[in-house]
Length: 431
Image 1 (cartoon, helix red, strand yellow):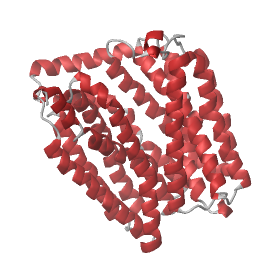
Image 2 (cartoon, one colour; image 1 turned 30 degrees about the horizontal axis):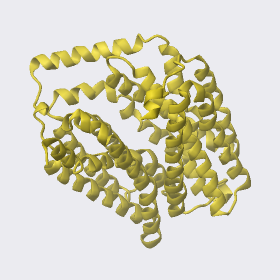
Image 3 (cartoon, one colour; image 1 turned 135 degrees about the vertical axis):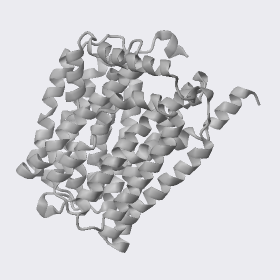
Image 4 (cartoon, one colour; image 1 turned 60 degrees about the vertical axis):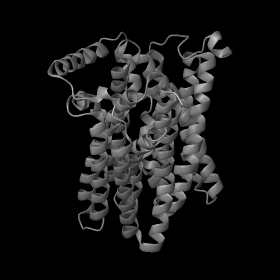
C-alpha cells in the first residue's frame, strides 16, 4: 500500500467521527433546546428569544477565528472544545431538576454554543491540514454525510429517546438522562480523537512573525469583503432570504407539541422526533440534493426565483395544519415533509450565492463572513417570533410567516449574479 493510500485510509478513522461530533452540539443548541424547554413549560416568547440569542457565537465566529490559529494547535482546540462541550452537556443535565433550571441550563447552553462554534473553526481548519489536497476532495462528501447524520441523530433519534424516557421516568428525569447520555457521548469522542487525530507538522505553533501576518491579513480580509461591488444588496439577501423561515423554525416544534386547546397538534415528544427530526430531515436532504443537480444544469440565475418560491411558499403547509389540525399522523408528516423539501431545495440558492459572494483570493475567510451573516439572519427574526406567536396565535402567525417572504423576493431582485454561475460546462457534464 502506498503512502497516499495509507493517509486516505487513516482519514476514515477520524473524518466521519469529527464531523459527527461537530454536528451534534449545533443541533442540540438550535433545535433540541427548543423542544426541551417546551416540554419543561417555558413560554414560547422566552424560548424563541433566548434560544435565538444562542446563534450569536456563530455570528461573531469570524472575529475570533484568527486566535484559534495563534494559540496552540487546531488539534488541541478540537480535543479541548469536545471536553468543554461534554462538560456543558453534563451541566445541563445536572441543572434541569433545579428550581432555577431555565437560568442555569441557559448558561450551559451558552458555554455549549461558544465551544461548538470554536470547535467548528478548529475542525474545518484541521481538515485541510490533516489531509493532502487530493484527499480533501475525496472526503468532502463523507464529512457532509456524517454532519447530516448528526442532524438526524439530534433532531430524530435523540428526541425519540427523550420521548421514551419521558414516558418511563417523567419529563424532568427523562431530559436529565438524555443530556447525561450526550455528555458521555461527547467525552467518548474527546478521548477517541485525542488518540486518533493525526499530528501533521504544519500544526506546530506559529512564530511571532506569522502571528503578525495573520492579524494583518485578517484586517485586510474584512476590509476587502465590505468593498465588494454590490455588497449592500448581497448582505440584504443574506439577511432577508430566510426571514420567514427563521421565524417558522423556532415555532414549528412548539406548534407540534402544544395542546389542541392552545392551537397546537398535541404530538408527543417521540412523534415530533419522527415527524420533524427524521422524515423532515430526510425530505430536506433530498430537496438539497435535487437543488444542486438542477442548478448544475441551468445555472443559479435560471433557478433563483423558483428557489425563492420554494423556500417560502411551502411554509403554507403550516397554515393548513393550524386551521385544519388533522389528527392523522400521515397528513402531519406529509405537510412537514413538503415544507422541509421546499426548504432544502430553496436553501441551495442561499448556499451557492454565499460561494458566489466569497469568490476571490480570500474565499475561505469571506465564506466564513457570509456564514456569520447567515446566522444573524436566523437570529434576529427568531428573537421576536415567540412573542409574536403568543400575541396573535398560531394561525395568524403562520400566515405572517408566508407574508414575510416579500423582503426575500425584493432582496433577490437586486443581487448581482453571473448568468453562468453554478452551471457545469459542457466538458464537465460529459465527465
